[in-house]
Length: 357
Length: 278
Image 1: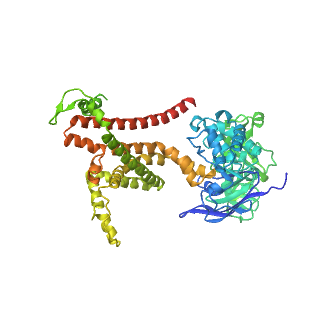
Image 2: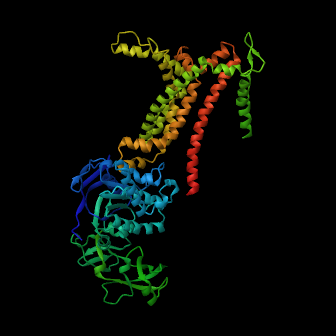
Image 3: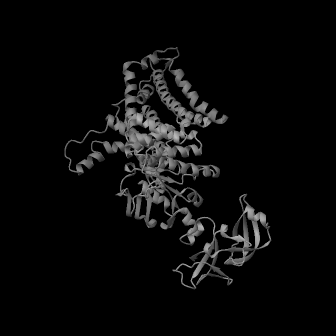
């Protein structure tokens, strides 16, 4: 594996619509052959950023460099970038084959080359049997594959996908997540996907950027974003997190009830500042050994069995909201608990993240 | 359903049947009708003199249709591209002329095109000193009148499919490498053809049978079938021949409407078939 090369450099890009700032000075590097996710709640600017990459919006400031060339002002039909639309935007009056051929016809390629490339991509996306159908004769998953084939057949430097799985039902979505990843590997094209579904980006992306209110909060691997979220919003948005509000102390957070949550306090938090300690549900143990740094007593309020694990809601004195605890099926079998039981929770100082509140 | 059918029969079918019956009788020597069966009237319709008027009417109606479709489609496109909240306002302005009477609207064109009318005055104001251009009582005036009067139908018929078009389709076409022009030709136009067809049929059918506009703006110099029918009934007093002409006109209109209905049906049928398959 050679050193990853930067394919697309987004350099202090801004976009405003009238007085609304949709994208506010975002800088990002997307590497060659990467599966990159732009993640954020609706209105965070991720779609506007994607539309600037595709050429449907022009930035008010900053540069977008593809292979070192500024493409910010190049029209969409002249960019080696293709977009897979959220609505798929298949041409309803054309067959699957005609939809997929369209982009190659625009490049004025010889008919036999168009034919062989279209055949190849239809085979890759398992659409050969549907080549003569019209879009309205296809299921949601099939339409999604046509939209993908239509964009991929152009062999773009960069493929943009706007909420590609949003229109599919949950079960199909899970299968398509892995399918998309397999395809990306197979065709060797850089994918940038926009999604509001944090689980989707955790599963699929090599790296991800979390956006909020037009600003970039964090850009890293899913593992790093999950384990070391940059701020409270990211911690809350990605996965599930338990929060204990309080005040910053020398080596942790003092909760409202006087209990101390041990953890590493970031340097920017001066003692006494409003802070919040956080811990992931799977890092919490039931009935921890006595040397565990953070321990608290609680009452089990509810529990949900998920097959692989058990999720408990435990009421403690530390926070208003009950703690969410995930216990493996093994651990639950060793020492069963039911609703109403008094339990003790514990977690290590290393598993605590402390943020400004 | 039944009362509507009764009305339709009484007010539409019976008069039509009466006119049709009339066409098979002979004209009396001093006008009036001689009740002996004949096919002569239909033979006369095919006479080069009258067949020529049919062709001329079709040509004028066809020209008006073409112009109305081009202008109407462009207007509908502009309205559909305008911000959503402005679209009803623009549509309101497009159909505003309908609020006044057809005759008054046509007279307004006489005021415009007259030898010393508004257009000539405007030219004079810009310093034109020559002969006033002869615009009224020309074929152009008739076509202008027809286009003006039926344009709103085309705008409404084309606006409906244009406003329903998913804007991402045009973007997808651009994204795949098509220019704006190619996008229009290969994506937008084919998807809005049903609206164009509906609008065009409307203009053609209403224009080919029109007699007010050719009479007022053509000054009687440009006879269309409508005028011919009018003359047979009210001037020449040859009701049977007038009836035969009217029937021929209705037959042409029916053919055009049926062709359009058939095309629309086949388009709808393809979709229904597609849905049944999938």
